[in-house]
Amino acid sequence: MLGERDVPLGINAALGAVVVVALCAVPSSVTGPQIDARLAVIAVGLTVLAAAIEDVAAVAISVGIAFLLFDGFVEGDQGVLVWHGRTDLVRLGVLCLAAAVGLVIGAWQQRGAHRTATSSSSSGSEIPSQRTRGESRSETPARPAEATASDAFGPARRETPDAQTPTPTPTRTRGD
Image 1 (cartoon, helix red, strand yellow):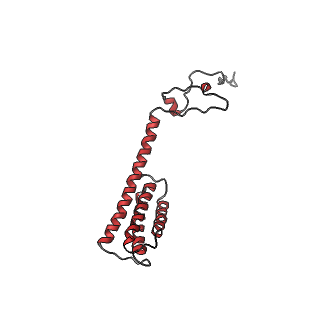
Image 2: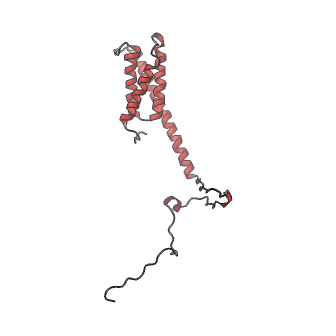
Image 3: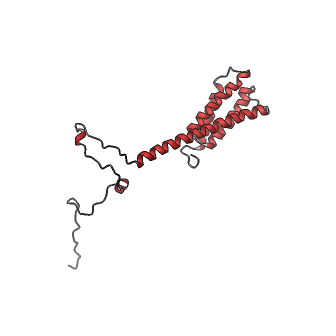
């Protein structure tokens, strides 16, 4: 969904922020070497979020929020942001990679859903007409298998007048 947005950016970014805060709070008692396990939890959550919302800008905002919250509250104490050089660069890379993988998965799913919808509509398959109660399958009128232009644009117009169509009557003018 690079060109169009079904949901506004602010909604997707807020959803991403809420998900990231929840992910940072989940294993709050883990400290020390287990910090990388908490990073993995956040990375998996970002992957799922990116695949679900498929919004590059909102996912980028969520990655930024995730890194800042991870650095300030998971790795650091009481929200103090400290740059740790290569370690933080690797952690930021892990979060970006997780988001990119999620976006690719989301695009792949969207493409598969679009391809399935396109193939079912172009193969000529039609939805069968509904039957009323008591009507058996043999009483349902059969429809032709091939689609025509009139199927796509509504019923075809009849060229011959029906008995139900009123014919115009000649009008008289005052001079007659």
